Length: 340
Image (cartoon, rainbow, N blue to C red; front, side, top):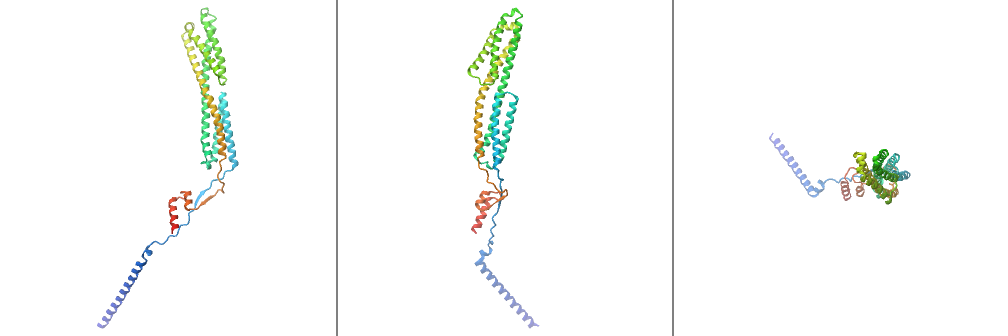
């Protein structure tokens, strides 16, 4: 029994020593490999370069030159139509002329909107940018002239009302003066005032004509008013006794309103003339700008489908972030791929 046990113990020790020796050898080989090729073994394997990304940019539809030409002609017609309407409105005080100005402004606005839609691709063109500012400014200038003409006409109505009040009150007093002998003095002053009013009526007809008044006409109108005011002041006491203080006060008030209305009417007319000349000059300049904008080169026609842009460094700089990835990250990745 004992010999067998001794043999088994000896075999077991031999096997164990062999296995241990074999393991030490493996460890030595592994250590040698790690010492010589360690950096290469533990480094990350090379990553395959990503294929160039494709940026899809939707191409703008091409613009038919015939459509653009039609829109331009409509804008030119609307611009000329607004000038004609404003001119007519200044010399004509009819409701029809006011309505025509509004229609002309609406036509110009619609024509400009149509042209602007068709020139969106040329938004960076200086001629198109200038036109985008010129059209609204021209419309604003036309409205200013029309508003000033309306104020001028309002002052003319005040002048007419004050004149008719003076004339009617004077005629009524004259009709009573013939019947009462005690009013002979008052009658002489009223006759003089009536003559001054006749002169003023002729002047009012000149004003109502709407034509430009020269210096002689303006001076004659002022002299007629001054003559009437002088008689009214000199005969004030006798007129107050014969017709009453209220009558005299009403005459004086109407005279003041008439003078103020006449001055305001003439002042607005003097403002209106240069504004209209400037509007005519601006209209000519606007026509030139419209033609200049119409000659701006249209965008290149395309098939209407998307176009492909490569993702190289220059392409990424052009495309920006259209593909949803910042261009700097893509540029960095492309450079790393080229270096590897």
